[in-house]
Length: 428
Image 1: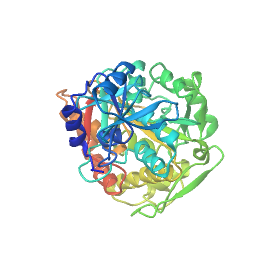
Image 2: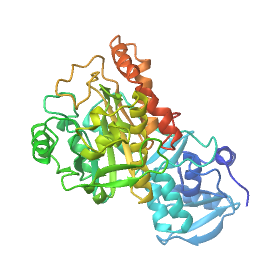
Image 3: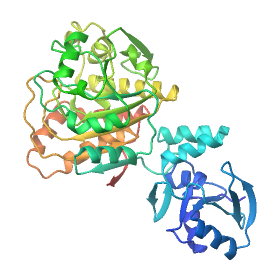
Image 4: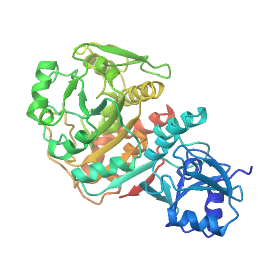
């Protein structure tokens, strides 16, 4: 059978003059259109019942099989494979074609449960684009910041966060004001039946112990809509990291093991030490235990929260250490078949982090929300929007980021295989 690449699929649909409003591209052809595989050998489509009967009359169709739902599936010229199942499902539009959502694609592949289907499920879950120039990671963007848009942008990702879902959010230092507020994020967290996950801080403050930290989480409204798990309350564990130049491992809260899937829900802002904070920082410093944070801050020299601040290293070493820790977490999740999705809310854009008890006021206008299955692409989109902004206050945020070499985390994370700095921006 011939190999059908993306351009071939589009051409065949056009050549057969199929009504694009009556068909839904599913299965292998959908994988190709999303960029998860290079080619397929036939084109699977779901059609309305009316169009199903129309195709049977118009073409010399060959019966192929009865599917798992008891429906007869037919071939047109041994190229187009059609049935009615999945036609009424949600879809995305790619090059003018309605394409089965990634969530439904995962469900279809799970039902088939062949070896190749399991491999393809992992490609979808981890945004593993197959082959050179097969497509850039998608970053979804909303200018509007509302609970409804937060849910919509999550659903656009097409990933199924199920089981015990950990939602990594910064609870914010006592005295900070920019942390993500309950009225914004609660509907999404509740939709996922998620647990807010955090770890204690390595610096002196109101979140160094469980007892202090949970009080701050309650004060900031997080306990009003979800359980809050300070994951290093009962200890931590090491994630080995052989690719590291600075870190030999990442040390994260022991309870991180308990979660089946993760939503990295970050607040985009500046940072006194890292230049900026978004998904990469939320995944590195944020998921690290108190001792793990010290290990990252000291670039692998000590786990002692008191001694780490006296360690000698270059600023760029700290930036790259964060990239290594974030990559270690991503590798751990992938090895254990646990999906993760990334969202950054770009509001209350102060030059200071939510970990600062004296956090300054916002210096520029809100930018919106970005979401992706690729953390490097999502952070790069945040940075690109700051640099593209015409708001005069953006210069203050740029200065904070560049004086701390903050943007250097992106190429280094890319070199570690964490993600791509190139992306396709899709506004919703």
